[in-house]
Length: 103
Ligand SMILES: [Zn+2]
Ligand SMILES: [Zn+2]
Ligand SMILES: [Zn+2]
Image: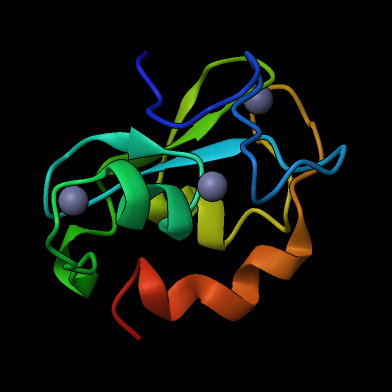
């Protein structure tokens, strides 16, 4: 899986590189994976569309630990961990959900 802007194989980037910053997000506008919205702003398509609620059952989150793709619902309801490998995700991402997902 290509993750534009990632600086390691667990999808950390120059903006978010804590131990638990291990997810990449597919952007609705270009259907490409980026580690964060800032990477999308720097390297992305130039558009800025968020996932509409009706599409939350589509796979759009990549776990950098096990490389499993999660649906948006699985991610949002998963308690900040991967349902496949149980790796912990950064709960701080939730303050930026509006940049990725329709409220
Ligand atoms: Zn885009
Ligand atoms: Zn980034
Ligand atoms: Zn995982």
